[in-house]
Image 1 (cartoon, helix red, strand yellow):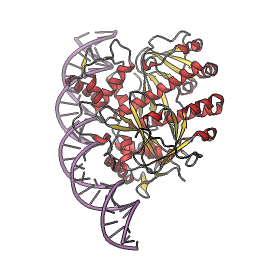
Image 2 (tube, helix red, strand yellow):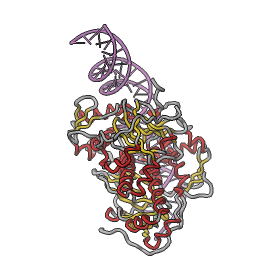
Image 3 (tube, helix red, strand yellow):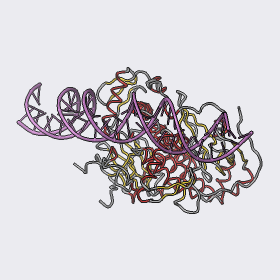
Image 4 (cartoon, chains in turn red, purple, green, cyan):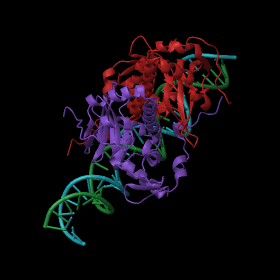
Length: 244
Length: 244
DNA sequence: CGAGTGGTTGAAATCCGTCAAGAATAGTGG
DNA sequence: CCACTATTCTTGACGGATTTCAACCACTCG
């Protein structure tokens, strides 16, 4: 239980590199220090102890960063996909755990000390670390915007758009969801049934179509981006009544 | 309209320093470069043009960072209080504006170029910039956790807890809300009426009490932290059914 | 074929947003 | 200090949206 990190082998962690638009070449200088871990569903990727001491890179699969409340309930606060880095913003009064969502999720761990040491003499790496931190912050911010939307259909629609940008695929409009409806629900703070209903709703409006349960094709990206599926009511997100 | 930034005078921006636990002494090296701006309610603090070119520090008052969706609706994605820095994570496809929420909100602007130049030769400042970025990321993360909660009462309760940590006061349990119910609603993505109802609910449960509309006293912090006010139902935030 | 997982859909109860009306508060000027 | 006004805050009622419980279908695996 103590040390969940189990370095498997030293190898080059640049396989499914894609999302987030972060260039990872500079990290090649660190590859000698990287260790890989292979995790199954619901297995903790890094324990609290190791979390802060390493910089982590998703190589394949999918993982979630969960916040556990004192009352025992938990909530996914970050969805980690291949190419995503995590482990920058740790500590704090909340407790975090990072768990694999799909089988055979592979993560590369870089010792933070080493990374920082190299960054001190390698400005290119230092700049890249900033980019990585920025990308992580933008993920959280994007998530926040999605969660703040009003209806379930809007949230799911925004989630699909986000996934279409972060997931690798031939076309931007083909989204291969790596996680179940239930996991999406955990991410969007709603029930799996509502996720399913929202997807059916979008399908019936011809905004998306399916080629398999987890393969979504975005047919009308405009409608998705502009929220053209909400009834007239404006909700609490309206712009302020001009200036008075 | 073009340039919202109006440097008023050069002075030392360390008045209401309090929240976020960031030590601002190292920034004193930058004070000669700082310019102050004084804004009224709903006035844009920094236009998009100046946003990325400056590092901003809240001196007094309160402000909100808003994301405007392509469909025109907007959402507050960060609440800025005295002592908070912002302006790190900019760009992105979304458009951001930062507006003062209360009258006489004062913000200090530090030219980003200058800050970075000084940071290159001042490791203490560089470390502090990291702390600042971390604080900003943690704000967003905390926000995410609040928004992910299920019921309105829980959200408002979590918001009160967060405010009790971020606002300065004699006692940790006395919270002087700086913004209206309506603004809280914009922040928590719910209507002002629901905010009011949630507060009344917490009051009737003896978890909080009022000494004036905007002065909340937390009477039972445990209940607030542990969410002891939800009916038996668990919602979608339950822990996974152990391990199979 | 049966068991198990994941996905969809239905029905009832609950929660929240909206509209609306009052109550409380703050600000202004006499 | 009081009257007047504007704003904010609270509370009620109604309708719509989401959660929950439940049944059913599709698929995989032994």
